[in-house]
Length: 415
Image (cartoon, rainbow, N blue to C red; front, side, top):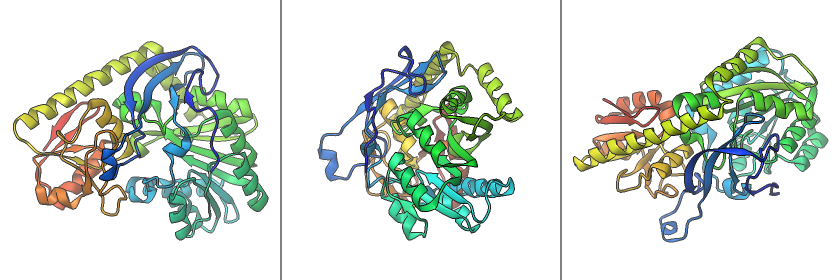
C-alpha cells in the first residue's frame, strides 16, 4: 500500500494553508483508537501521538494538528466492520434508495465507494443491479470480496483512480462515508474524486458534523482517523479549488450526527436547504474562535462531572462495565483516564474482532456482551452513547437489570 504525504505535525490549515492556526483543545497524547492490544501486547511499549484540536480563522476549518501515517491508522488488521452496526446498514440502504429515486443511479451506473470497508454500503447498490467497486486499504477488503463486492485493496490515490478509469470508466456516483475527513492531502483527494466522476455524476460524502459535535459535546469523535471536522463554508472552499460545487447538503443522524454533502462538477447553484444550513452554522458560532473556546471549556467540565460520578460509584463498591467499545470511546477513556480500575470490562456484540483484546491506552478488557447479562454489574457506562437509546432498549430486553450511565453531553444515570 502506498503511503500518503504530509505526515506529522500540521503547521498550516489542511484546506487553505493558513499558518496561523488557533489552539482550541488538548486531549493529550493518545494511541491510535483502533490499536487494540493482545494480552501479550500489554507488556510492550505503546505508541501515543499528540491529539489537539485547532481552528483556522481564515477558511473556518476545525482540524487536528498531528497526522499519524495512514499505514498505522489503517493497518491490514483494522478491526472495524461496518456490517456490525445496524444503524449504518439502515442508513446506507436508505442512501441507495434515495439516489436511485432522484435519478442519479440507474442499473448501468458505476458506483465507487471510497473506504468501502466490508462492502456494506455498496451491497445496497449491487442489489439494484448496478456496477460497484470499493476502495479499501485494510483487511476489510477481503471480507467485502467474500461477500461478492469487487474491491481494490489500496488507499484512494491517483494510481487507484487511473486503474478504475481504465477498467470501468468514470463513476456516476462516488461515495465517501465516514472517510472523507480521514484522508490527508485534501486538494489531491478532491482532484482525484473530480477526475473519477462523470460529468453529470454526483459525489456524496458523509462526515461527522461540527454542528452536532458542538451541540452534543461529542469530543469523543476527535481521534487520529478524523483529520478534519466539516462545516459547509470550508468544504465549499475546498471543492471550488478543484472545480466542484456543493449542490445540496443535509443533516443526518448517522454516527451521532453527520452532514451529507452532494457535490458535482462545474459551477452550480447551491440548494436552499444547504444555504439555510450555512446560515445556521454562522449563528451557532462554528466560525467564531471564541465559541470554540467555550466549547472546549464545556468539555473540561463534562470530563470532571463524569469522573466524579464514576468515582463515587466505585467508592460505594459498585461494579461498572462498558456498553460497546467503539473507536470513539477510546478518546473518551483516554482523556478522562478511565482505566480498568474503574471500568471492569467493555462489552461488544458477538462476532466482534475486538473480543479478547484490550482497549488502547486504558487496557480495559473487551468481552462478549453475554458476560454483562451473567454478571449483572450495578452500572453500565454507555460508551456507544451516540446510539445509546437503541442500545439501552436492547440491553434491557436482553435481561440486564442495572443502571445505565450516559457520559455526554451531560452525565446522567438512567434506570
